[in-house]
Length: 395
Image (tube, rainbow, N blue to C red; front, top):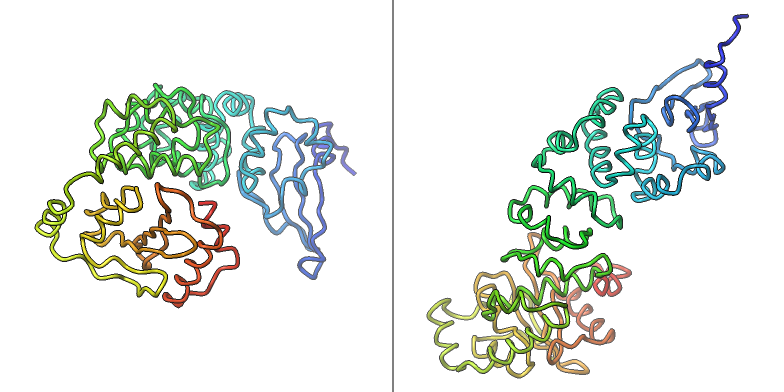
């Protein structure tokens, strides 16, 4: 029998075997290189006749990292590496394998985690080889951006290195990639004080003039709900004639809210008859409702109704006149436990519930939301999802 070298003995002791017979119904094993192996987390599968499959670099096994790697091995990893590995649980095996594949890869992961993860996701998608990955991580950071199809700008490298490491979904990385291709954003990113994922989600959805001051109203502590509120009221303010100096004077979300309220008051003091005549000349007759109402939820029927709704409810619904005329939005009056205004938004698959607000943009009660949802699913003949109200509240 041939004697094994020290390296061979080390490699054999650094392989974990997982018995899969109970899952597939016949003798079948998965052997995974542990973190001590020179090529960590590569794997191969075997049956009674021998080798069946051998993994490529970044090829997933279908098992979680906790199943593949002993707990004591994970515990020995530096906390910084564990933090990066756990940012996207669905990709933890691939991320950890890429971190440990070379010292240069580890350095990139620790110094610029988001750039590193963007590279890992792209390398997996493009079936980049182990050697190809090792060559890329020793290149200039701007060359990595070039490989990712992004502008090779040092400012992007620096911004990614400063961006807060908080993710909810792996799709957050896709949003980052999309936004980094936006020229409007690129000119502003060096001036964002505390970049975070909420900035990227905001910019992806924002369709108006971006300013540094506006972006700096978002911080790593800004919730999704607050970022969405910022998006809505900023668009509202622009529609009501906000000036750039007014936007730049707002140093907090509360100050922007106050500006919004002042603009609403001014907007609703405009001459109602002149507004109605203008809308009729500009757009013609008021659109027909996309969904039938009832005794509680009543569609607006004319431009005068829209103007009156804004004045009565002390919000800016009448500033949506252009979007209403284009069939993007439709407005309903709601006579629930309190008076509400409901917006429906047009989507490719039909009309969906949009904003629901009370007087002065107050929030509706859960009971009133439930009533509106009951109406919506009844008139659209849709099946009611089990957690529809909770999902809507957490948007």
